[in-house]
Image 1: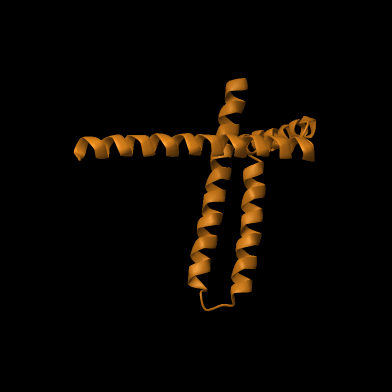
Image 2: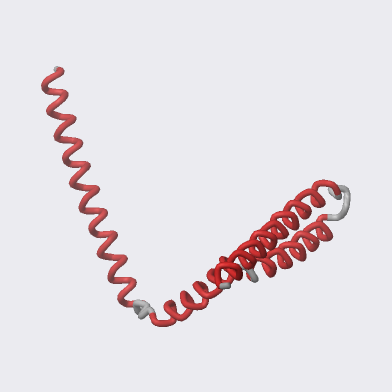
Length: 122
């Protein structure tokens, strides 16, 4: 009985995804077909059809999983301890100093190798 339910829900998910693809295809076709219409109407039409397609997609198993992931991600982001302004400035200054030191070292190495090459070449 469980396998039968999974098959029917899988077929239903396939139909829902087909509806999403058809809706988005129709919206793209209509946007080109009604090119002479004002842009605001075409944009509003695309937004409405996209919202309907997103709603249909959210009712599938994958869409439900994505919504659950988004909720969990938002919860995890709230748990993050963000650095203070002072910590951010200190870290930025350390990175800038490290980049400058490496730039000077590479410039010196390039100059030295260029000088050696000019001695060899003549």
